[in-house]
Image 1 (tube, rainbow, N blue to C red):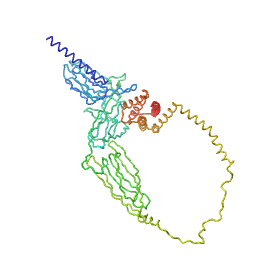
Image 2: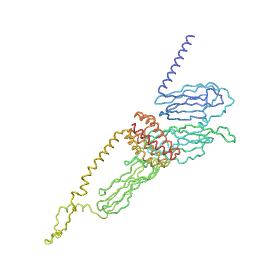
Image 3: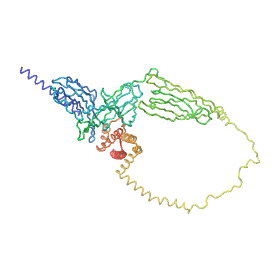
Image 4: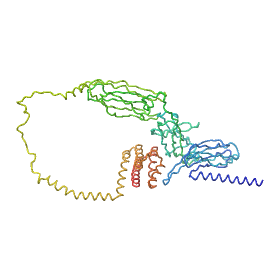
Amino acid sequence: MQLISSIYRYVFVFLALMVGSLTYAQTDNGISFEVKLSKEKLGVNERLRVEFIMNKDGDNFTPPNFNGFQVVMGPSQSIKSSWINGKRSFSKSYSYILKPTEKGSFTIEQATIQIDGETYKTLQKQIIVTDAVDNPNAPKTADDIADESLHLVAEVSKTSPYLNEAVTVIYKLYIDPNISVTNFRPVDSPKYNNFWSQDIPVTKYNTINTTYKNKPYRSVVLKRVVLYPQKAGKLDIEPLSLEVFVEVPTGKRDFFGGRMYAQASKSVSAGKRTLNVKPLPENGKPANFGGAVGNFSFTVNTNKTQLNASESLQATVAVEGKGNLKLFQLPEPELPSALEVYEPEYKESVKTYANGMQGNVKNNYTIVPAYKGKYPIPSIEFSYFDPEAEQYKTIASEEIMVNVIEGPTPNDAIAGAAKTNSVQKIAINASNQFHFIKVNPNFTSITKAPFFGSTLFYILLLGPLAAIPLFILLTKKRDARAQDVEGTRLRNANRLAKKYLGTAKKELNNKDGFYVALEKALHNYLKAKLKIETSEFSKDKITELLTAKKVDDATIEKFIALLKSCELARYSPATNVQMQEDFEKASMVISQMDKQL
């Protein structure tokens, strides 16, 4: 028996060492995934808060079964992200509120998640549930109340759209009636890869009374975006994450009997949504189909049908309706060779609403006939896919006849070419055949005074001599500027900053236009200097590239801070003073970065 107990003891120690080594193997690469409990011993009438926390975003989170507990609330997802000295700090958690179902000893089993293709597990936790305690309703903290009272949800109009069919995503914040939101700011904004996207500005935040999970809530729409999927298959919509600042009632009252509130903040995330994008059917697809998806009308017309040769007329090919108007090409007319056609002028009048694009697009052709006659503009076909009817539709325009009333005919042109080879004889009167020659001309001298010794003579003689000192002075100044390397860099950097920030400066009185132009200027600058498409990179990737180019941390931090300021300004008010400060910061950062690059 003593031998067997010794064997068990060694086996236990070996397994403990294996678990310890596994835990260290998971944290060697800097990734952590752990579980935190609000308490490890509680009464059967109390509540337990369980948090699964990771320092890097992952996929396929699988919680344990929570045997012996009832899930009162959860999972509640929270994301926190910050930048300190150019380094990003990230934390994501899944929270549950549990209610014990009976007394005893229970185990919170392992939760799993996949991060960078590897599976990570939390350690098991032991919980002791005792008899009911005297004060199960101890006051909750402000963070606890905020955690239970805020929910950010992404509502998608269609989960299985067709390729290039409009999908509306509405981000709603559900708020418990007992708390109030004072402000919010975006933490992570989705990039909408593989989608054509258009934000629909929310000009006013109106709250309405509604329900969420069968409980009374207030809801407010924070963001609207219209997406047109550009790829078939399963496409992910990245989550929108916000930090929300709230005031929570404490249950206490002040001297005058008024309620006392505590301030708290919570990071909420809408969660990732996945769309199953259906490809357009091949069955019945017209040969001339150009990618139009929606519901459209099609017209071809001209501003005149009668004119003379060498005059011009305007022919318009137009599509109007609702659908992906900016994402397909208009059909082109095939005209007789006698009609000279110039490159079309493209015009669009399209607005994006919450349910998609509406308006019209058109091509205006200038047509000039060369000869007299009647020339047809043949019928043109336009095909599109109607997602509601789930079928292709084709519209054909009517043939238009152009009548050229006056002008040469093709036969006249051939005859005119032949006449150039014949000689026409004209009778000439010999006695008066030189009458057009003037025999008494009145010539005048073109030189009033000799050139030698004139004012122009001395200017041309002495001018080059006088220009020599000026040339020497300019050459010395140019050489001095060339030797001033730092000054040259500064001038070039300032010139570059003005080039990229010119549009933003014009929009200083328009908050939305200014920050859109400022963000585009910052990305265009990196695109030009680093030869990359910065729209495809996260802030982490941009930081990594600039660090590799030996740009100092302070400059990188200022640059990233400006990008964040541009994103934040879309959801919060900004004054003209703040916009002017951001503009000056951008000019300074571009100048500093250009000197280092």
